[in-house]
Amino acid sequence: MAATVTALPLAHLRERTSEKWREYPEDVLPLFVAETDFPLAPAITAALERAVREGDTGYVASRTPLAQTYSDFAARRFGWQVDPALTRSTADVSMGIVEILRRVIAPGDRVIVNPPVYPPFFDLVTEAGGVVERVPLRDTGASWELDLEAIERALEDGARAVLLCNPHNPTGTVHAASALDGLARLAERYGATVVSDEIHAPLAQPEAAFTPFLASGEAARAVGYAVVSASKAFNLAGLKCALMVAATPERNALLRGLPAEVEWRTGQFGLLASVAALSPESDDWLDGLLVTLDANRRLLGDLLAAQLPEARYRMPDAGYLGWIDLAGLGWGDNPAKRILREGRVALHFGPAFGAEGAGHVRVNFGTSPEILTEAIRRIASLR
Image (cartoon, rainbow, N blue to C red; front, side, top):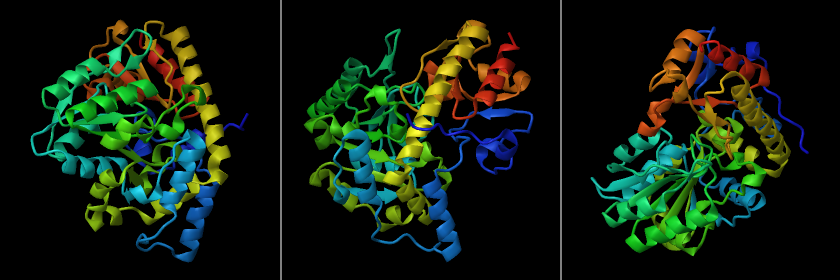
């Protein structure tokens, strides 16, 4: 088993100047935004230190190792064969989504999303000129899954694209390969496009058997795009680097046709850090992070069971985000407000993820066991 990755001490973390550590006063434990509390992988630190030492802070080059490095990473980690020639970089996953959607829909076309879902999805569809078509995940009582019957009804009624979250944020669901193939076949039947946000993919637990959308079958290759990044797994969001991926020359024509500025927006530090993150020398660090997150997702379940038995929590398949139903406590549609005000713990507001988030909170457990334990203790003290 890989060595675990240990979170930095709270005093050290409070020296950071990023959103997680500057949004709220110091008496608040911040478990809201998707930043983690771990040190950088050593290869990333070395790459950035070298760049600063040598003043390597200019424009991103027109030829970089990023595409090949990601292709090798996808083959090692997911068994997915990515053709480096069918990729293009940009600043972040959200920007990649918008640039693709703008070119596969017409203004006013409907785009399917599956709430509860990452709140910016609603805004990204609008920014691209589309109209959000809500098709919620199906709650089976034991898990969440794509509601393919409802998706088909929306496509039959004229929806032109699907914005997929794979793995899903906030539930941490790793969609089954059969469900992804089923979605792709529906999109192919109705002439729609699927854009898959796979930013959390490197954080899928090994037993979850993550399948990239474009690897789910021939239909997916024909109808889809993936947008990927090292930013969530390696905590690089501020450095700005993502890849848009196609699986056929026909789909790649859209990426080749994007304005040069879309690629120029890639951050130089983001590219250097991403190459280091996705290289084999960071594999052990990532494996260790997965071990740490596995322990934390289980700890969260244990803490809730012992101190907040009214809470409903399913251990996520991927990532470091816990989706918790607190409706049983009677704290209203947005319990995170009371938890922040009275418990001094900042969680992501459930209703921001769609109507299905009423009564819910999202907890970032990409932290130390001590901080996580104290956060749940504070929340439980409000009962």
